[in-house]
Image (cartoon, rainbow, N blue to C red; front, top):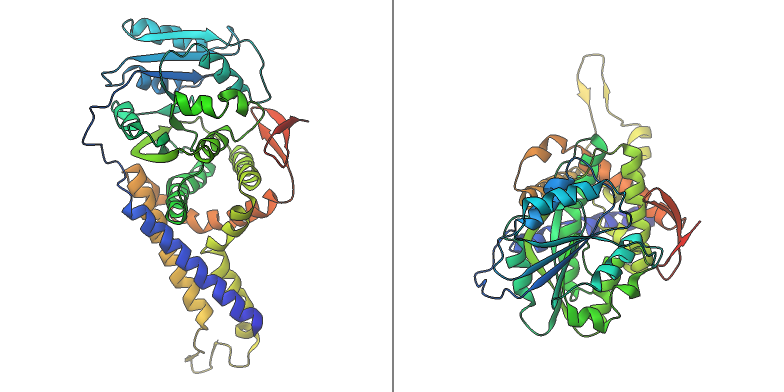
Amino acid sequence: MFWTALLGSLALLSLFITVWQWLAARRFPLHQRVADQSFTPAVTLPKPLKGCDSETAQCLRSWLTQDYPGDVQILFGVASPDDPVCAIVRQLIDEHPTRDAQLVVCGESLGVNAKVSTLIQLERLARHGYMVVSDADVRVPPDLLRNLIAPLRPSEVGLVNCFYRLANPSTLGMHWEAIAINADFWSQVLQSRTLKPLDFALGAVMAVKREALEKVGGFASLADHLADDYLLGNKIARAGWRIDLCPVVAECWESPRTWREVWRHQLRWARTIRVCQPLPYFFSILSNATLWPLVWLSMDLPTILFKSEVPWIGSAGFALSIPLPRSASFFAFCLLVRLLTALNNQGRLTQSTGHRDFFWLVPVKDLLQAALWLLAFTGNHIEWRAQRFRLRSDGKLVKD
């Protein structure tokens, strides 16, 4: 009786949190553009690069074609002049001769995090008081800079970031991952913001004041950390600045990935979040609105299956049945709510309907997420950029 009541309470709590996340997402003015776009200070875009794929040129081109009246300095950084991405960068620079853009070879190794090592070296060349950092696979709309920089006008705002979507899921594993990114992640961030101001950053695209960056030690203070985006936002928030969100959505374009590759990426993400926010991540399992109703239902299955009144077909062909337990009805209701809220969140973020064909992956994602949650606490090893690392309790990376 105790366990049934406990699991029923957890199932109800998971439903409440799911609806709470959906409501927080509904209130956010997603895709809305700022009305006053008069604040357009000079900006430096340090862009660390490594390797390339079929989408790289379009992603980088989207930064060279920004409709932004202020001065924009773009620094493409690579660790080696032999990197194949160099040819793409040189071609793009030739296509946009009026842009202040250059390719910089960042040959020094200044920490375990190669991306941050490149950023440290690009920071030395930055000329402007505002910096926009983004991942190599990010494609943005032409007005992104206008809308990303505008919230930095108040003196108390030190960093602004925007949500992102997985734009081209091309395998079943990537469609599963798209639910985590396009439906759940951004709504969870907004739910967190209803409890307290943001004290972390989202790494796909970040705009930061140079003053705030230097106050927390620059990119050099992040050199050995995997979650450099989280740590940068956390440092800036603890230094007294506010972190804001831009409603414009960026797009992440990725090469096709197998289930194994997607799983490794999600496990790396889970273990990183667990190290950064151990207590919130531990309690995040409570929001799984597929897991807890299903566990509650499983407690009633023996009763249903082995009671003498179990449904059967009589000799006359009449079906004899017993009423379904509350756990079965509640599981069906939770599953419906979970599907509808996830599909709605994905539709709002992506402004498309292609994800609807994969609605059945939502409960699959939830159950696999429970396994990832458990694995996040059972190890500290991750794979990143074809290398194996160990995550220390302070978030630093150590090569195996």
